[in-house]
Length: 265
Figure 1 (cartoon, rainbow, N blue to C red):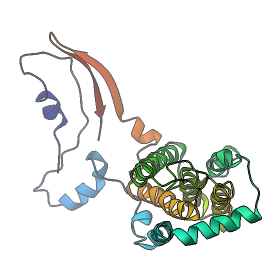
Figure 2 (cartoon, rainbow, N blue to C red):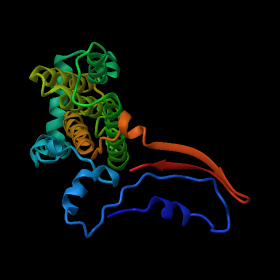
Figure 3 (cartoon, rainbow, N blue to C red):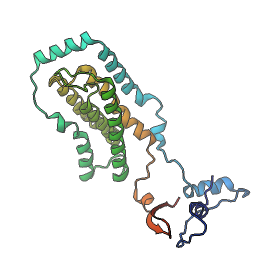
Figure 4 (cartoon, one colour):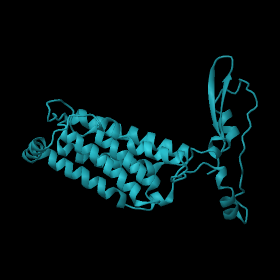
């Protein structure tokens, strides 16, 4: 599918108005060319296309098994009132935690990822793509968790509201999954450290009587799932090469003013 950029831009405005000259760089491939397939491959960058990382797409359902199991287990425990209350009583009898360390510990994997890059240990993606991925993951995670908190309306062990699922735990596991993707291929210990940190956050939320065990188990799954979905759909265009193709400029005519965003495919 080929797009004539000049025609598309011109037809978006009234023909009677005049604008400054806007040039687009496009490449046309003759359909009747005997080497059409070869020309298409060589000029693939001249048309808009989804640029998925195929190593992320070809993993099948394997990355989603753990998140689904965690969400399912947490949901079952959520409806098993006696079980979760007995577990909560046991935890409170055997632990005494009243701090707020988890407020900072949940972001530890994120700090480690960027810290490793600063000292020269490169991860899977560059700064632009890495940042775009983690921002989208946290936004998606917040949408899922906040919506469920409001919809479920579960009371906390301490008497508060909006208990299920745990926001701290879901963020911690979303970032642990992020670190696993960026550095897990370099050493398994990066992943072990990230998940251990996230698990500790969940345990602190239960020990501090802020959440039921069902809240943190399900939240671990939601956090991991949000990051997996972002890696699956991210288009990897946040780098210098693609950003150089992006132009933003103001325009005006006798009746309207605005800003045009032009991306050269």
